[in-house]
Amino acid sequence: MSTQNPYEVPEVRSTVSASEDRERLRRIATGQRNTNLAALSYLCLLPANLLLRGAADSIPGSAVIFALLVLGVLIYGAISVYGLASEFRGKVVAVVYVLGLLVPFLGLLLLFSLSGKATKILRENGISVGFLGADPTTV
Image 1 (tube, rainbow, N blue to C red):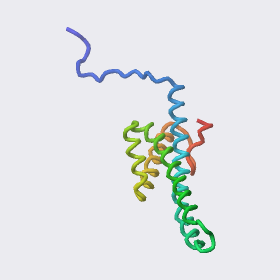
Image 2 (image 1 turned 180 degrees about the vertical axis):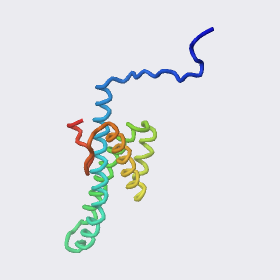
Image 3 (image 1 turned 90 degrees about the vertical axis):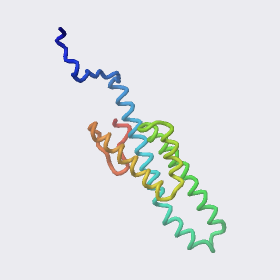
């Protein structure tokens, strides 16, 4: 008769080395910093919209300026969200998150939720996280 318990939880051996774990944390920190900058840029679009509407008569082409500004923020947000979401959930879900950025309020919620998840993971690993996220060079 065997002395091994068949109902015992199997032993888990980690195949991830410490350097690979640090590299993943560095990618998360970089993605979080980019996502936070995208959210801050997203929030700055409202005052920019109000300023350019007020100056629409005096600045020719102010609508074009604002459209280019919005396009730049959306592209930067899409790149940063894709990078961070693919680190957490995979590439297919990351594409869905990027498409969610096109919905105005949902995009902001996605940016904040991804940043919160990254903050949780980084703090669990003993990395200090500031206003714009963790500094990737110190990870």
